[in-house]
Length: 366
Image (cartoon, rainbow, N blue to C red; front, side, top):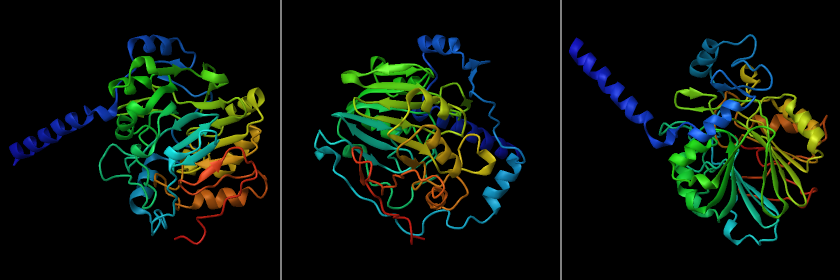
């Protein structure tokens, strides 16, 4: 029995080693980038750090209580009972002069602006985890594949978590992407996945990438963390202020509420559209995922003309009901009065129409 147990454990260890050697886990920063990140004022003791002290858990919460709640507490309406409604927009046939955004659920979306195509944090594999069969997308939300996308001028990556950087999607998109823009260290993953190094632009907070035809990407802070496999915070998490010839769009990535929003608003505001983290939140980890009322305050800090709340409606990564983020932010917004962008997955958002109306598509769904 003892020998059999040892053999079994050894077999599990071998499988684990082989699993974590899979290409989906990426790799660390290259030598040249490592020298840059070690010079970064945000990199200390081998890791990147947030602008403000950011504990893993908020006061009054423990990992034990969170695990207990996750495993043993009932979570009503954690996943929708039926397939969520969606629209399949033909992205290949969009008129090139159309300025449009198409959301794929969670934090993935396509934007066409002044004849340039942008793609943010695409995840089309149907899961938000490296483990098959886990963290699966809700029914009806996984309607797009890499084949549905036209060529992409710029791929923007906010951080390297699996629900934002999906190996299987990115491998399929590799030949369609012109340039990758990401935080320091994240490019190592893309190099392992076959993206040419000359097409990867890695930036620190407060740096900028000058693009063609008057486009500028300002790389800004976020309050979050990073990591794939066993390593945490060795790559940089970012937000972006995308400045086009006619608009300013803030791409917030994942973030807890902090002073960086007011800083961006002061330096770059007003912002035409703020796309902000609003979902998969919990009071226990509010320092890394803001609550709905904080997303609204962040939009106000940014001097945003419209707010698009994302990070919801595709994966269940927190304990709240699947539609709670949308229900709560709409109710709380009665006190803020910020025009909200709440499209169906796949529904075109006209970026030239600040008065475009959206129906509350989640109302009445179970």
